[in-house]
Image 1 (cartoon, one colour):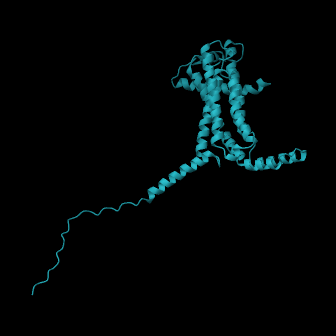
Image 2 (cartoon, rainbow, N blue to C red):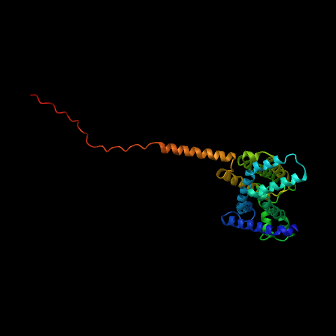
Length: 311
């Protein structure tokens, strides 16, 4: 069942990697095993993230809706605080859902990019995990990745760690060091990306209440989960996640700087910056322009007053 669902995605992943590798070798990089296959995973990440840009803006819109509805949501929670009877719980749920509809959002909006990337993540994992079997001929090809190509990808390395190496299965100390560095980098970039969104682009009202507590908890839990589970990921998958997190960080930095959420710290800083620019512009316009100098001509001689004639 899982093979049937993931195989079309594996096929697309394989063709994107193969096409990117062909582009890099055309530009002069070495064919066969080498850095061209490492950069093909980077190219795969960029292609996927570009395809997800419309979803990213929908996520921003939904997240802003969640932020704007926080005061109303807290009012509903306060209204039914301490009421545990079924009628009150049902009324609270109904009013909460009405708020979601009013603001055009839902609690799962912020998770959509990760959820939609999950099939791609598993497909890439399976492609890299099956490279040895394809290279040995015990498994059929995946799209253009046949026995020869699989051997080239498997032999490609990042600082001595092959793209298919996994921490818990490799015996190479070099590979393990590279994998640990990638795992730490993956978890750190995930943490700072989430912290950037939470601390700088959320109004004060959204930083209080049960939902804010859950978000703060997830800020630390998700990186720890990936830090622990990273020992099961091939090097190629770790490269994918690091590049994806760096892309998210840059994308959020641009969005927060240009389009901050109403009431957030980022909006306050943006308004202060705009006010300083307006004040500086007004000060420049207020300085009077100097009058043009009169052209210099021949010096006028002082006129002598006519003396009265003596009688």
